[in-house]
Image (tube, rainbow, N blue to C red):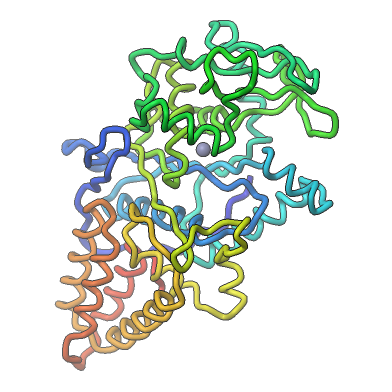
Length: 420
Ligand code: ZN
């Protein structure tokens, strides 16, 4: 699927140190490349949207964070392979389409386009591989067939609706050297059961071998879209196997970073890794990186509370996207935080101050600020400290020559994605 247009990323003299990131799976920070392979290619998979609603600030924070990861790698001289999926068929999308009386394909297409426009406005570098669930079904079916043949997946008897053929993953049988339950999340079983029920799982489905077993293939139902599933029969894919297969088809194994919001740690990333381990006896990713949740004014942000802060609405209201991006960079990516009007106003003031300071900066100042930004970004994407370095530079007594402006403007653009 077409992603969005590539922004121009300037080249900057010098280069970034090796990026270290906090790995959820190990609970520790680790370098994203061995020291002797600091310029080896890097690869990243970030879970994409389910296109039933516009991009809210939580989405924007996630995609901007991984954009910073990509920019830091590129600045260090590494080439980056980046894949993002779109879950363009799933229960929430079909439910929203039915509730609003819109064809689910039209709803998906309109929301994907809105997402593209938001990403472009926020100066996010697009993934090379932008792949929908629907277009990956022919990759996925043979993988699930193999899991069935290996008895690592099984069919559950018909439930109340009388439909036969739903295929589930045998979590406990699939454990091996590459993955054991909890390898990614480190959660205990009680926590897993809670999140599984809350986040689309069905622990109470009768006939499952274990309550946590996730769906791999949903057999066709009256009124639901379905595709040819070979030996699986007509149906549509489960969510975790979708990402697991798209990642393995498009990236090296294991790839460098699996990314997403912290609400994807379990069950989504746990089982994406489990499916890869069961199929290939191999780890899916080297580093699991998760972004915090974004609320509004002290509350959880959710559709049901009607308090989503949408990037598109802010843009419509005339807010400059660079100021939205500056708000996102002002919060550490691993923190949970709240969007407020005050944060936006503060970011707008900072952008104005940085622009003013660019008129008078010298070459020497420019080089120092770029090095400072590089150091902070390599340090587990510490964007708030990078912005504080910019503030300190901008607060210095004004010089007069302005001959460093171009170099620093390029540095701020390339490393932080802020086009000033
Ligand atoms: Zn995913």
